[in-house]
Image (cartoon, rainbow, N blue to C red; front, side, top):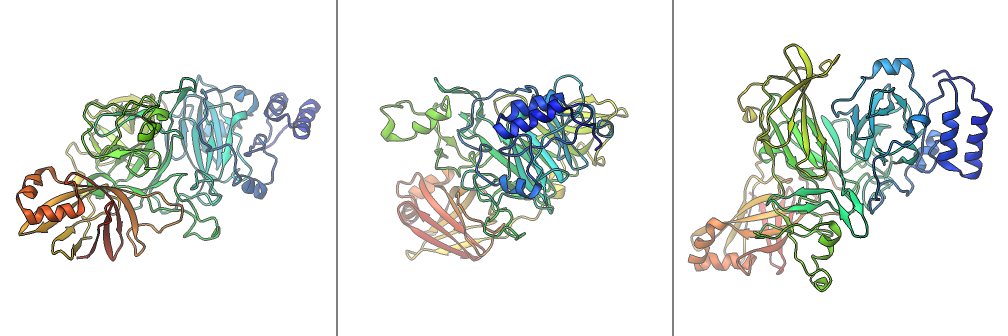
Length: 578
């Protein structure tokens, strides 16, 4: 891009900033004093003005830094002097980008402070307030001219560059002088220098940030809450929840990438196989059989759509699933009138009995199973597969769904609150064009028309005492699995509430010869409790797994060869494929 010569004062300010470490303020003044149309602004984790060559920049982005650190700091959206320090984009960029971003996508997004968009593999930004011009966003030289994807949610943003590698921008709702970039992604706690990638085989992907929204430290207060499956309003965890959801090419698998879970193997940086870990999933609608053509996520809420316009939404992330037992407590039992904790600080410490003297009030645990998929009403008009979820407030009920469409010949957006009882309304968008083909959006429910086949994975085993345990149609991403236990000529159902265990190392995707490990609870079916009590042999068999007859903690493994169920009371049952 052509540029005019810099005035001496701007040059002196830049040199002074570098020499004496005056940082963003002096550098920002220098940028503001620059005349004409300056070169692209750049940034790095430690150098907000970005002067490192690309290879060095890429290396620096893997070092420990502030981005992704815990606890999440107090902050408020603030554009600051960003409009002064970010140079205006060229005329072709102004003409090539829309005047306003109306929907989140893989190429554009927004938060309360900024709108973001990609053009010719570079990132551009403009204020979310008023009209204004597109500005050249500060990016590390590592990703300059290489960005192929973008997703923003609240105060965090990710871009894909250098072959789909994920780069995260912290404080994306702040003035750019406070932006922090990182290529780290994965356990332990954002520290994996190997990072992660969105694989080119993915059909769609979307980034989500569930913010605890701290408002005070003394006293401890937060605004971010979500509602579990039993209606308890739970505080968002201390570090928030960062998730990237990726939809398989077949549309029936939803992978989750989480910076606290394994990422790429840092010891095999050149390996495509080990460049990312896709072993964690969220099961899709209809027991994972729904075939989606697109996906969008925000605030841990995911929306999917099939080729007939059938849509489902789900509030779900790793913390809600029952998997994060290091920080949270879960239960499938009825908790009566207990309420969720007022903040994650009290919620965390109140779960420990030895701290009852300090935190005497009991709070509801996270209810299992986690919130399930909800079918949304169909849009009463023309639509495409372009969908979007956006956060409209600090509670999980504060979500808006958007679908690109057309009405009376005008292109625009169908939108509604996430409440399935809410109705769709159409808003035309001036000069907008459809970005995807029109779907066959029939009024009828066509969910069953595109379902994948049900799982054919079955397991069965016999205990040395003679009773048997079996399960059918096992999907490795399930959270609720029914087992049948038989003894004395009678059978009863047991329900397992399971979630994958956190682990530090890489694991292959899917059900393989490498055992997948789950943790959870095993309970007798409420409908079969009377039958269990009436049959001594069946009662004894159930007691072998669930001594108190009510519920038992379990560790479970599953592979292509066998399944094992191990109870807290050290009872082990092996089930072979059947």
